[in-house]
Image (cartoon, rainbow, N blue to C red):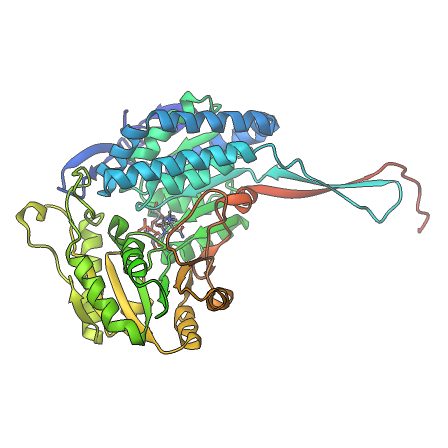
Length: 489
Ligand SMILES: NC(=O)c1ccc[n+]([C@@H]2O[C@H](COP(=O)([O-])OP(=O)(O)OC[C@H]3O[C@@H](n4cnc5c(N)ncnc54)[C@H](O)[C@@H]3O)[C@@H](O)[C@H]2O)c1
Ligand SMILES: C[N+](C)(C)CC=O
C-alpha cells in the first residue's frame, strides 16, 4: 500500500504541494507511515472531479442493483483483507487487534447491508386526488457528497458514509482524520479493485482546517456528512450554509448509564466496564456517566473499582492487553486536564487519575482507567465529553430523579438503563432524550438500526433505512395523462 498518495478522479496522486505528514503509533510514538498532506487545492480538484462525474450522469444512471453488486464486492474484499486492515487500524489507533477485528466484521456487514438495500426501494405511487393523473415519489442521489471522519473508529465511521452514498448513486470526496488515515487509504484501493468507476470516490488527505473546511464551504458540494466533535460540527454547519448544503452531523455524547438497585448487580458492573473502557473510552457513546441508585452506590463503586484495578494496559498487539493508549499526546494532556479539573470541582479519585508508572508504557499515550466519585450534575467533568477512560459517578433516590439527571445534558446521543422491572425500564426509555437507549445492555449497534443523536449530539441518522435516505433526494413526479385547457384566464 502506497500511503503517500491521495485518490482523485481515479488516479493515485501526490499532494499538489508535495507535502507529507508523519503518522504516529500511539503505543510507542514511532512513525508508521508518511502520508500525503493535501490542502484546499487538492480538495478543490477532487470536488471538481466528483462534480464532473456526477453531472455526466453515468454513475447515477446505473441500476441500483449494479451499484449494490459493486458495494457487495467491496464487502468481500474487506473480508479477504480483514487481518491486514485490523492490524493497520490497531497500529494507527492503539486499540487492541481483537477490537479492530470486530470493527472489520462490522464494516463488512455495513457494506453488505447497504448492498442488499440498494434495489429494495423503487419509490411509491401516491393515490392522486386528481382524475387522470399519476403521482409518484422517486428517490434520487443528492449529488456530490463531502464526508469527514474522526480518528477513533476511522474505517467504521467511513463505512457508514461510503456504503449508503455509493448505493444511492452519489459521487463523493472523503477526508479521514489526519491522525488515522491508513485503513481509509486501503479501502480506497479496495473500492478501485471492486470496479467503482473513476471519479465516483475521491480521497483527500490533510487537516480539517484546510481540506475539511474547503469541503464544507465549496459550493459544488451538495451534502456534507461529518462525524466528530461538537465545536467542529458547529463550524461546519456555518460553512455549509454557503450553498445551503444538506447536512448530516454525528457529534459527541456524554452518555448516562442508569443503574437501579434491582438490576442484576454482577452484570451491571461488568457491562459498565465495557461501556467505557473499550478503546480507552474514546467512543462517542461511551457510558462515562454512571448514575446509580443511592442504596447500592457503595457496593457498586467497591466492585467497580476492584475490577478497574485489574484492567491490563499495553500494546494492542499483545493478546493480554485489554486497553490500549490514547490517540495522541495532545489528547492525553486534554484527558489529564479534564480529570484534574474534576478533582478541583470536588470529585474524588476512587481509582486511576494519573498515568501508569510501568516503564514499558512510558513511550505510549497511556492513562489509567479512572473512576471519579462524589460527582454532581452541574460539574464540568459530568457535563463535558472527556473522551478518555474516565467514569463519573452520581447517585439518585427515585426514578424521576434518575431520568432528570440522565437528561441534564446538552448531548443526547445514547444512554442505558439497568433494571429487572420491565415497566420501569420502558418508562425510563420513553423519557430519556437520546438517539439510542439500551435496556440491560450498552454500546450495541448494528447496520439495520439507525444511529444518531438528539439535541446537540447531531443532525440526521446513519445506518439503517434512514442512513440511506440521508444520501437521497425525494422527488414527487406528477403526470397528467389527459391535459386540457383550464380556461381560467
Ligand atoms: N456520533 C457519532 O457517531 C460519533 C462517532 C465517532 C466520533 N464522534 C465524536 O468525534 C469526536 C472525536 O473525534 P475527533 O477528535 O477526530 O473530532 P474533530 O472534530 O476534531 O475532527 C473530526 C474530523 O473533522 C476534521 N475537521 C477539523 N476541523 C475541521 C474544520 N474546520 N472543517 C472541517 N473539518 C474539520 C478533522 O480533520 C477530522 O477529520 C468526539 O467528540 C466523538 O464523540 C462521534
Ligand atoms: C458510533 N460508534 C459507537 C461506533 C463509535 C463512536 O465513537
